[in-house]
Amino acid sequence: MRIASQEISVAPSVLKWARETIGKSIEDVAKRLDLSETVVEKWERGEKRPTLKQLRGLSTFYKRSLAVFFLASPPQEAPPSIDFRTLPKTVRKPFSEKTLLAMRRARRLQSLAEDMNKALERKFRVEIGQATLSDDPQTLASRTRKRLKVLLEAQFTWKDEAAAFTEWKRRVEESGALVFELSFPIQEGRAFSFAEADLPAIVLNSNDVIIARTFSLFHEYGHLLLGQSGICDLSEEGKVVEQFCNRFAGELLVPKQALLDHPLVKISRAVTAWSEEDLQQIARQFKVSREVILRRLLVVGRTTERFYQQKRDEWEHKLKEQHKRPKGGRRVPAKQCVRQNGISFTSLVLESARLEKITYRDVSDYLSVGLKHLAAVEMCAPITD
Image (cartoon, rainbow, N blue to C red; front, side):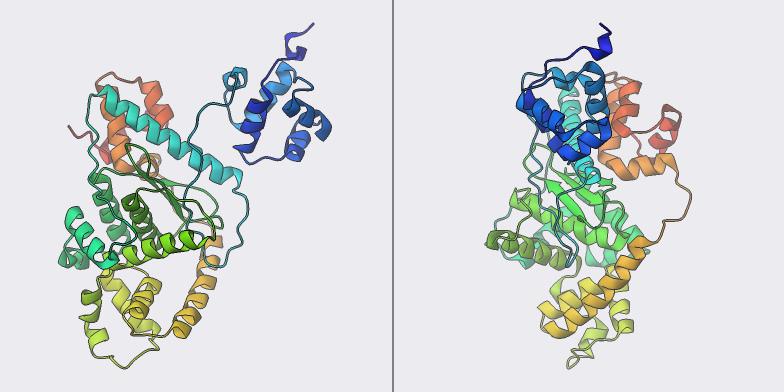
């Protein structure tokens, strides 16, 4: 008998787990392996066993190592019970393969960071703070600004929205949180976070526009303050948490008094219908989107819910069109590597290699970058002792 045609004993629960964690249906598997759905169903009920060749096909399709299928039961992995800030008015659907893989990669990088810190005998330094839903978002935002050491005057001097995002991201990483930028369908969400580990992590959607990533960064930071990753649902509790995190992010990026003191806001006390030009001018100073500014104006009573919703619908349509356009520009592997993995994680990997805690093959694997680019990566994310 040929080895590839030998039937292999695999725990049905492992087969089902591997399929579900990549978001595939029994129909998907049957089509991929050119089998009937009945055969796949029997595998998962333990009534039939796959051959080694079929198992290799499953390994490729599920993006799992072949060794996983020889486990007696599914491995213990943290469930993707995360908070997802979906785009306005999108219809919720099961997460796609790309989104599930982004979750899986983020969890793996988070676990690797913890392992490397332990190997280096470092103590976990996380200075994010804590909060409850009873806290005042304005007070919490002010306290967080002080912790991140960002003065309003400095924020106003940043070159543009891209520079502001880079600076905010750096400050969040310095507080002890990991920040990754991974690609997954923008229709499914803008960001998610894992708050329950020793090293909390925020994952931003690299397909999103820069200015939206800044708000998402602090929306998810709000979840870290609450100490919960959250579950994406429509329950009242879920709505309260989302509203709290949105309010916190808005207060931090555009403090109430600073907004009221802006010259355009001061001289327009009776205005509720704001022009695009005025909103853009205010947004440019705070380095945020027009929607964030208009939402803040609504919170402080300087516009109406009707006007806000009208403008939001206009901008949402334009944003969807913008997301459809192909991204131009030449990709630089080293810069892309640091952007995806964050300076904090990248530096940790490089330091672990220098101290021979991991191999350079590991470095390439952890950072998903070719060895020939490591010198350039180190220039973008120097090792910090």
